[in-house]
View 1: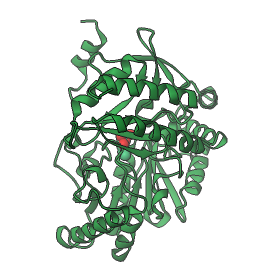
View 2: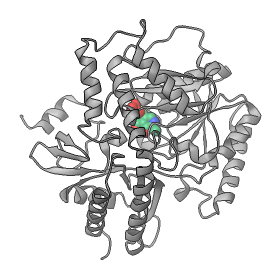
View 3: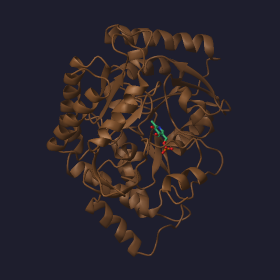
View 4: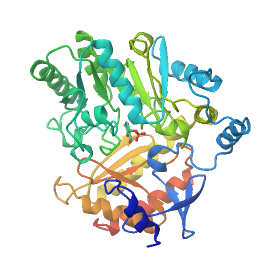
Length: 430
Ligand SMILES: Cc1ncc(COP(=O)(O)O)c(C=O)c1O
């Protein structure tokens, strides 16, 4: 039994899903391209699930990490001052736009959201949480407890009481087809109804992804969360924006996904792209919310010297190369290129997203019935043509496109040509 796939299956959990009928081992990366163990190179449009925000082999990040390694210190602990941690926190606090912001670093998005829920529930002395249908926020008990997607809800055990609100997934919403303004109005009415009927009023927080990641890059109309926030403010309910996928300029028009909604959240959570592969996440929150815990808390590895030095280099790179503007420009071309394909392919039900975060939802021709088999075929057909993409969505029928934000125009054109052929080969007409 020496095939890596067999060894993987023997010792790793069955629920750790692998892509592709013949799973891929990536052994090398450069720019936006990765090479597998058979020497085949692919253009990467999923970036390790939106985590390799800059792409591969970025000298500025490697040099910063190497310099830290050369000090002999991989870890000291938060019992001691960590200069790069303080500097990174200062920068994130400033970028957040949250007044009197403080930052707590973790190793993952899950821990970031667990922390945000801990803070909100303690601050408000309530265990009631509002989440969006079709949401995903992580894999631990509280975060699974606020997951609105059956495919990722492994347990009903939860430390919080959650009520789900409509709005994050317009394509399959009961309010589908309304104008954006009427859609928002209907969702706000639903929120009021949920507060009235499903809670005891003193709700701790609402948590939402500005664009639902695992949920298939479902994208609500701009302004939805601003309208929600007005209702929440009437009750003193905190608003948390989960920026794990949407942060750092990926959505193009704003630095944070929530920027499209005209509201400054009480907290934001982040992870993935910040470290370009280094394990780092965190919460940025209003100071009084962050400081509300009445007991010690610690994350041993959270904000460690290697991760924070690397993350500082990532943020510098994002700013110095104006990757947000690149995401906006190339994202618009990606969306319109895919919409062109959609016009002639009845299997494409919806094309949506912002910046370099674009989803294509596949349906049975002539209707809206989800077509997960088509999405699976597109995954295989793109790979066969040298392109890696992601898959997801409530019905597993969405292809997710999220390349590194350093993408070039030529690479975008290459990917669009492959996608056109792959979709045609997967059930579309041509
Ligand atoms: C929006 C969102 N929040 C939280 C998480 C959890 O992050 P992690 O896998 O780093 O724990 C994810 C992971 O995909 C995510 O997409």
